[in-house]
Length: 200
Image (tube, rainbow, N blue to C red):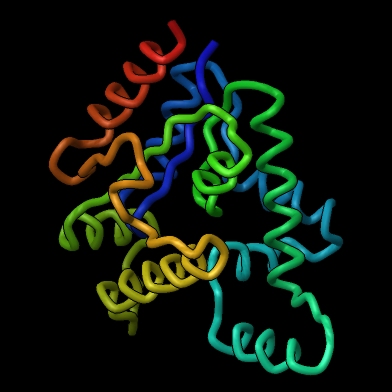
């Protein structure tokens, strides 16, 4: 049986696409947007809020958590969303092989002692800018590089906030792949080959 595969990815590196292709090739469920749908059911929050808060920790939320903690117990919407996502991720992984994108899934499964392959997809800035423009079209009045850096910073902060570890640190992953150098197809093949080996 294939192991669960988690995909952490830099914004614009193609991690979502690579994860989706891996799931299709292995014939296992793919969880990215579906996590949002299931988290909405679990938490009662709307999908738009979950998409906004699901992988970003804002300074406003952190300040409110700290200030509220000094006077009373308070669980912010972001914390509730994280816990709901965590439940969705654990339930999916316990059901069997699947591919899960982002949302601290590598850390969550590692803490739960669920066997998995943790993959980091990254790329150089120029390749990422090209991918973003291909996916979203010509974004007028937007500095694409600035947007990429901001998104990465948000993911890094979110990961640090909920795991107390560094997002992108090689020691958290079994496989780190440069999608700009290797191309998506090679990344997919390498992840699938590792999954095949682990399944034996």
